[in-house]
Length: 146
Image (tube, rainbow, N blue to C red; front, top):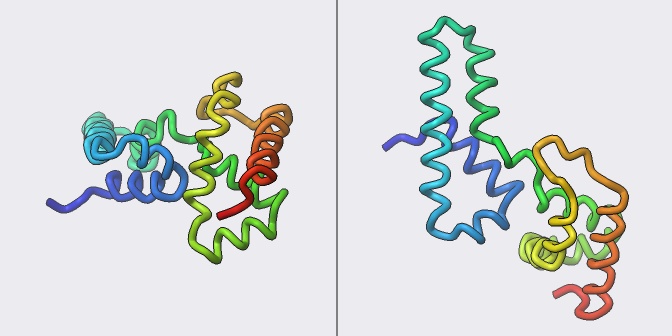
C-alpha cells in the first residue's frame, strides 16, 4: 500500500518533533498515524466535493492531522538545552545520544509540563523555561552527559 502524503508528513513530523511520543506509543504509533492520515484524507476529499478551494481544503486537513501535536515538548527542551548548554549539546550530537537525552529530560520534566496549560497555541512561558532549565542543570550536575 502506498503511503499518503498525510501519512508521510505526520511520520516525518513525529520523528523530528515527537520522538518521545513514538517511544511512548510503541507499536500503537502505526495505528495512530494511519487513523490521523485517513481522517485528514477524508476531510480533504469531503471538502473538495463541497467545492472548497484546494488550498483551504488542504489547510483544514493538515490542521486536523497535526491537532494536539503542534507544541512539542521535545523541541521545547531541545531549544532550552541547545541555548544554555551548547558544549554539552555538541557532545551529545557527536556521540549520537542527543535524542535519547532529550527524551530523558522530557520524562524528568513531565510534572513541570503538567502544571501549565499547554496546547497547540502555547506561546511558551519564562517560568516553564526556568523550571526546565533547573531540572536539566540538576540532572547534569548529578549524572553529566552520557
